[in-house]
Amino acid sequence: TCATASPLPARSTRPQQRCYFGTPKRVLYICSVSPQPNASAAGVRSVQLVRQMKKYGWEVTTATIARVWSATPSELDIVRFNNNEEFEQLVESSDPNFVLFDRFITEERFGALVYKMKPKAVRVLDTQDLHFLRRAREQFATSNPECSIEDVSRMVVPNSDADFGRELSAIYRSDLTLLVSNYEEELLVKQYGVHPHKLALAPFFYDTPTKISTGRRYNFVMIGNCKHHPNKDAIFWTKTHIWPLIRSQLPQARLHIYGAGLDAETVKLHEPAENFFILGELTTDLTTRLARYRINLAPLRFGAGIKGKIAEGWLAGVPCITTPIGAEGMRLTDSPTAPFTAPTHSFNNRNSQAEKRHRWSSSGNDSSSSSSGSDKKVVWGGAVADTCEALASQAVALYKAHETHEGHGDNMWYKAQQKGLQILQTRFSAEENGKQLVQRMA
Image 1 (cartoon, helix red, strand yellow):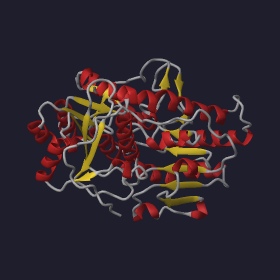
Image 2 (image 1 turned 30 degrees about the vertical axis):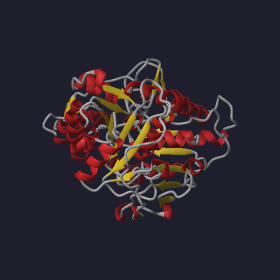
Image 3 (image 1 turned 45 degrees about the vertical axis):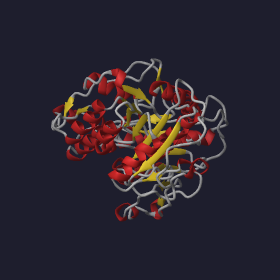
Image 4 (image 1 turned 180 degrees about the vertical axis):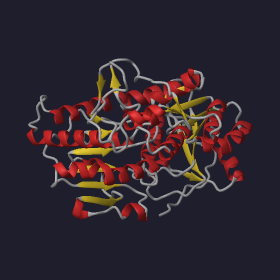
């Protein structure tokens, strides 16, 4: 349902707030869609960004030309405008010295007008994830059914790709671009020549717990908005290739799948006789619900950015079984940044060497990976594998490990849970990331 948006504001007359890191900041945050934290990780992070800026005394006006949904938190006090004339009024009344665009398509539409009206305002692009990378990987994976996940992760986006040109142009036009993944930061710098000073990391901002319940848990869970193609593909791949392998060894276990945006095709996968349940959008607290489960499955064959579904699982103490695509930009290593391997496969190259690798439904030996070819020590809260057999094997092993779990450090499931918490505290802390965000923007 739609909510009533705030009217266009008059120029602010409220008392000046205390602002850290320099002179007072007035931010106009322009969203292509109304943020819905209960529907997507992008919505969660958008709300987190606003909270962090306000925490440091920044005055934030959030606005959109789209519908304002009732699921959008009232704390955003979101303003809806309907045309360029109303947008110009909004820019004049909010008088921003920072303008934040939530995606490259938003910068395309309003960036030039902002520059014309407020040429001294700092224009910041928030990518959420690199759209051109995600969409190119999807096209590569679906048009090359024999390729491996490694092939997908290392494919090179051609310069002729439309999204590539549009998003990279928006990055160059902006004064600063926020990225969620250090992999994507290094990709832009090393592969596409973007200067590091134009980029800043701004991943998740979680108030991470110091301790998580280690009580009895049951069954598997998957979460994700099904309008997001990587999530829908993961559900279908799990149903056809991964879940039958898990169920053959754990016939009593169930898989519960939650997510907004379910279509009829996905709903048809609901099959209680096989303990495969499509349950739709959660209406209760996500962390509380996830805390019931033993294993979080995120078998992503393509995608980009960092994965909210994995981080939310760790918040609830649920280890995650995923692919190298799912783990990209989220693993910890003993070096300051995650290992970066430059893409090598051209977009249209089917790559003869791929014939020698495991496929989506390989019959080869199980294999799992907790690093991307690096000999550095890697931390992951669960397991990372690149074939359906390996994913199922790791899922079953970790699931069974919980049976003997007694809350001590020698147990494999307990270690996975603690590593997930370690990653949240190290990489996705609201305290640290919020401070770095405002320092970098200021």
